[in-house]
Amino acid sequence: MSAPGQDEWRERGPHMGTDQTKVSGPDLAQGVAAAELSDGQMLAGHVGQDPVLLARSGAEIFAIGAVCSHYNGPLGEGLLVGDTVRCPWHHACFSVRTGEALQAPALSPVACWLVEQRDGRVFVRSRKLSASTDDSRAATEGKTPERIVIVGAGGAGFAAAEMLRREHYAGRIVMLSHEGAAPVDRPNLSKDYLAGTAPEDWIALRPDDFFSQNDIDLRLGQRAARIDLKSRAVELADGEAIRFDRLLIATGAEPNRLSIPGFDLPHVSTLRSLADCRGLIAQATHARRAVVLGASFIGLEVAAALRARSIEVQVVAPDAHPMERILGRALADVIRALHEEHGVHFHLGETPVAIDARQVHLKSGLSLDADLVVAGVGVRPRTQLAEDAGLAIDRGVVVDSQLQTSASGIFAAGDIARWPDPHSGERIRVEHWVVAQRQGQVAALNMLGRRQRFDAVPFFWSQHYDVPINYVGHAESWDDAQIEGDVAARDCLVRYKRGGQVLAVASIYRDLDSLKAELDMERQVAAR
Image (tube, rainbow, N blue to C red; front, side, top):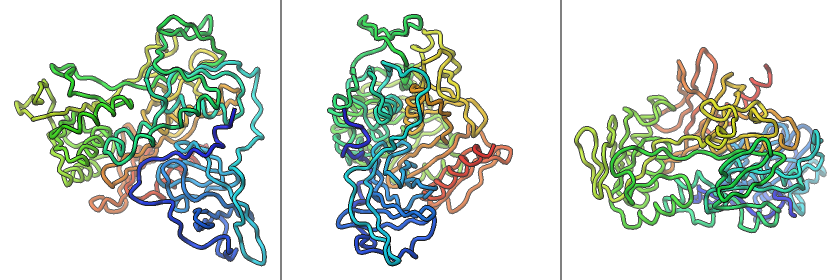
C-alpha cells in the first residue's frame, strides 16, 4: 500500500490560461547571495526547468516546488508563516521542510530540494527523491480502530480517507457513495469544466487505481439506508450490513428543487454531481438560449460557463441585487455589472411560476425563451440518515469541537455538520468545499484518537470569467462593511464587522491581503 501523499499525481484545475510552470527568476543551481533572503522572505527561481521556491525561516533556508499542487498557484506570491507557505489562490498550506500539503484544498505534496550554503551564497543542488511526510505523528489514544466506514465520497469523505492513509492507518477503510463516479473536484463542475476549458481527466481527485493501491474499498452506487447504533453497523439499501469501529457521516447536500409545473422536464437541470454536469454539457451543445434560476454563486458561475459556450443567458432571481446577503450591495452590483458586460440579462425581483418545453414563465407575466434551464436555488443538507439514527440534529448534524456527533465514535463533516465556530462564537454550518475537506482531515485524525479541535477559518472562492472572489470567515449578518481599494475597478477588499469585530473578509485581486486576514483571524482565536 503506497502512501497517498507520496505519489506523482498532481491535482490540476482552472487558471489554465497562464502557464504557472514556466520558469523565471534566478537559476538557483548557480546560487544566490544569502543576503538577498532575510528572515520571513521567499525567492522564486528555478533549477533547470523546475520552478523552485527558496524560503527562509529564522536561520534555516528551505527549497520546495514553487507551484501549488492544487491549481498550480504561484507559492512565491503567497504568505510565509513560520515554516509553512500558503498559496495565494485558494489558501492551501505546505510545509517548507517536507513539502507536505498541510491544509486543503491541496492534498498532494510539492517537491523538496537539497539546499547548500557556502561562501555567503545559497545553492539548490538536487531534488530529493520524494517529498516526505512527518513520520513522528502524535500517538493514537486508545485502541486503533480496525475498520472505519465513511458514508459519502465528496470533499469531506475523500479528504478523510486520504488523511487516514497518509497517517499510516493500516486498518480497513470502506467508503460508500450513492453516486456513480469516483470523487471529483466539485468546484470545477460549475467553472472551467462546464465552460469547456478544462478536460474531464482533470476532474477526478485521484486516478482510478488510487483506491485499490491504497486499499480503500470504494463502493460506488451504494446508498446507506440505516445506521444501527447498537450493532455499530451501516445497513445498505440491498440489505448488507457493514460493521464499523469508527464512522464518518459525510453525506453532503442535495440541490433544492422548485415545486412548479415543468420542473421535471428533460431540459431542466440542477448541478451537483459529475453526472449532472455531463448532462448539462450534452444539452449545451445544442442549446441557444438558457435561463438560470437563482443568482447564487453556483447560478452565476453556471451563467459565466454557458456564456463561454456562446449561449444566450438570462438569470431569474427574487433578490434585488445578486448575492447581496453574502457580499453586500457594493460587491453585488459589481458582480451584476461584470455579468452584464458579458451579455447576461438579469430579471431580478422575479420568480418562476411554470416551465414548458420552450419557455420559463415568470410571476410578472413575462415569458423567457429557453432551450436549457438550470436551477441554482440552494441546497439542503442530507441529514436524514443521521436523524433516523437518533443523532442530535439542529439545522444540520450537531458535532462538538472535534467533529464528533452525539454518539461516541461517530463523526460528521462537510455540508451536514453544525459545529462550534471559535471565530464567531456561534454554532454554524457552511457549504464550502474547502471547509468540507479540512473537516474531513480533522475527523480522520480524531477517529484515530488525536483529539484535535477543528478551528480552521472558513474559506471559499468563486470565479466569474477572469475575476476571482476570495472569502474568509463567516458573517451571516453584519453592521458595518469597510471597503478598501476600488470596488468598481475590481481591486478591493471588504471587511464585514459586527460590534467592531471582523467576522469575514471578501476580496477581489487582493490575494495576499486575503491570506493575512485569514491569519489574523487564526491568531485572534489562539490569543483567547
